[in-house]
Length: 418
Image (cartoon, rainbow, N blue to C red):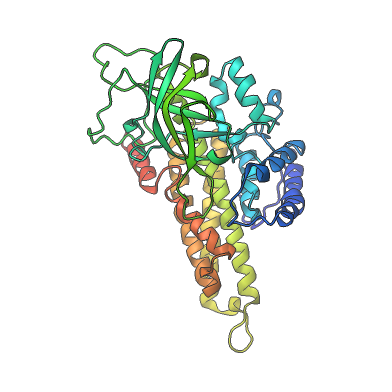
């Protein structure tokens, strides 16, 4: 992969999609944000997002990665990543709604293959059509990396289940119609004091029953929960350092879910929820690469036009040239390893170790790059409302979200030792 800040796509199928996506992001979507006064500080509503979902669907972008039977174009992971990078590099506030990251098909992910015909018809196909939105509810206050410590329970009750618990950091929760909720089966135990940190990378029980001698081990199941169900409350979640209001807490108090809303089999919950982690981990990287590309572009623009004593541009100074050179090199390295791993994934290879490495390197490189970008923007880079300041906060978050850098290192070391 040769270096280019704004790469020229040579894939004959992908090239026209990239061109059309760039036109939409820079044209119609930019105008939509301007006309509605939408900024990064805006508290977005469903009324803001749904027109973007629907228009993106009309243009063929919403759920474009899906199989053709669902209205997509059956893209490879590499092709999808290229589109995600373009969205990340566009600087659009509502970019997350174009391909379906915010409550849409990308949020549903690979779990469609576990869905029954009823679940596809009632829940997932309406999401694909931009009619409904979903969120993912796994994390709890004391169950982040150690998801097995979750306290939310599901109790069998006649022809259904009763859920009790409190989920946090449900991204897209404020806009969602339903959630995929993972809960511990109430007839199994969990010892939250075991000190075992399973992270988000371990295998999980896949059967609907428990083996002899394992009856005390927790089993987890996944449910599709309509968020207007009695006993379910959707509360404002914590506001992350990015300032975005996209998180919800979901509180469940004797909330009844019919048996037909069990996704997969009992005991498969963590396998369903976490089985797509390797792919998702890789596919988060192109969005961060887009942010890196955007920051580098903004920094080059500033250093070309900002003058110092004598009227010389900042970029004429060797010290500044070296900083920009290091930023570009970090971007190239991060981008190259990500697309190499994606290509291997498309060939059917096991890229679990590479996914750990990519998430680690992209997150750390993006933070370094944005830190330098802030430095080169001076006081403007410290000012709220400045895009570089916002991107710095977003990339700081990426070192923790979707698995901390420490979790990635644990995974790499474990794979090397096995």
